[in-house]
Amino acid sequence: MSLVDVLLGWFRRGTVESLGGLDPTTTRVIVGLGNPGPEYIDTRHNMGFRCVDLIAKRHGVAWQDKTSSLGGLVAVVPREGGALVLAKPQTYMNRSGTAVRHLLEFLKVEPSRVLVVYDEMDLPFGTLRLRERGSAGTHNGMRSVIKSLETEDIPRLRIGIGQSSPGEATSHVLGEFVDEEREAVEALLTRAADAATDWAELGATVAMNRYNNM
Image 1 (cartoon, one colour):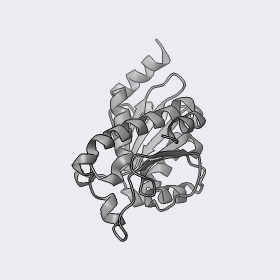
Image 2 (cartoon, one colour):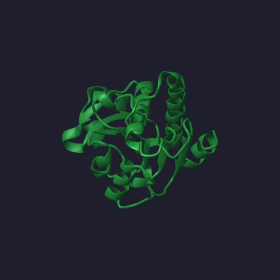
Image 3 (cartoon, helix red, strand yellow):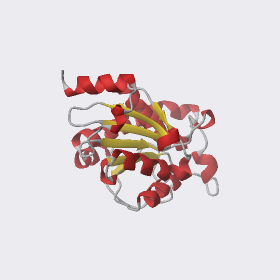
């Protein structure tokens, strides 16, 4: 029986061991930022959630509710080289860092092995930007993550949602895409999921070269 077969057996049973027994040196983590609740599902601010949802769907893995202990939902994808942990903090966007810190402490994973995926108002709609480190810019969710982990050396994938009109930033990010944008949004999410997966499988350099210029 291969390692992947063993891991799949754990994950499908949803046991604690499937999350607690992972090797921190080979585990990779992808965290999608967003807001919990049905009223936020299709908003621009939930592109991070939708990206990791797509990755989980591709691999046929279920979300485990670890909100009480780790502050969010978690899914685990088996890989030959080490597990891929997906996460969706349920602490609301501006307090995302607390959940990310708890998860990384539990997994004993270094911040350099986590990719944070989120919407970026300062990028044109449809643009992807993957970086290995940097400031949070104007994004409150990423600002919370940096503050909680006490480092800017955190890989991140920003998904461009386009700039708002002056004074309308909140309504812009909490608004839904209009009908004529929806097809483009699905294509954007597909590319974002591809980029995040390539980061985990092939490394940051390959992923940046493939997707930062698209």
